[in-house]
Length: 501
Image (cartoon, rainbow, N blue to C red; front, side):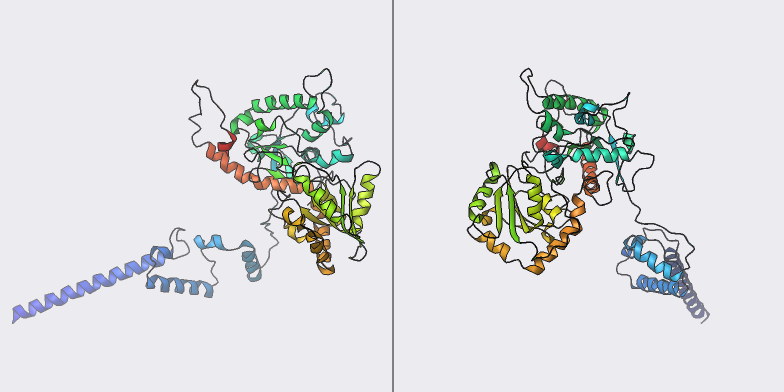
């Protein structure tokens, strides 16, 4: 009997110890879980560790409820990166007093540009500016060298960008600053080559009788030798360099040697796609030649001309459509389609014609783009674009369909197609597009000093949007930098454009 009682007592004792061990273990586990779920838990702890744990879900709910009841700040974990800062600030400002401390989460970032100090013959010397002393740049506080007028102005992009960088170094720089010049190349986002290539082509592309090559070609040869010899070019292969060649014929000889750089162009009409393309390069607007329509109070009825075109009619390459459209539209009573030049008050007549027209034709010529589009925008004359291969400035952020009509060339040259399409657009739709033109016109205005949202600032912003892609490809190119590409003679060679990007 005593042995049976002792055996029963032993069993009870073992059960009690087992229960005690189990209870203690459960308490330990719960304590561990609560500790990890507290406000000091590390960021890598999350519900994903135990996706099927109902207990953890209940505990998480309980903790959240306790925090909300006691007005405890939420813990910083992985979820916090999904919270919109603006909404967070709104909620915090409504629940806590404002002590006058303002945090600007939208602080303006600027593009940092390193610019080569090229000799004046590459830039302002082309404007007949003479340097004083050792300086290579004009003193903008005393006088800004002027750019030649007429058709030269339409490709003057590099002039305005260079002025803007020089202005950023003035003691009291203008308020509109998206790009600034930096002297330390290690701080730069991009390296700018200040060569006035379009002006060089316009002024010095002809060969004199005693010359073997034009001054324009000679300048390009010197530029290539200078730039490719720089340590900055060698370090990146030119990938982080920025060069303006806005005139379709500018930089004609040097482009195949400087192609790794980012180009600022008017279009890609005369470039092979492995040298210039949308992914790598920036499309900039022409500087419009006609005057901007200031205080435009037009109405649909006050512009008597339905469709306007004045310019060269017979063009090569993709410009055949101009001739076809001339014969299709020349007899329409409210259409102006005529040959025109800048000579004999041509610009004044074009200004008057566009300002009094509802729609303005922009037809491909020798290249996909032309200044006529930007003249139309400045006139608030709704552009009708007939150019299948055209690339447009800032189109990654700007919807041109809001203020332009696009027509495929194959449709436009069909009999009555274009005129029926234009006549079908009524007062309300035209007025909406006309208003939108006035809203966007500032994006195409070049001026010094530049102003917020004008063409200069918009181009710099377009360049800034290319910088991450440039860095990505530059970093990738350095993966095997310890093993340079060599030919059979042991000499380092440059990869071809096809494989470079």
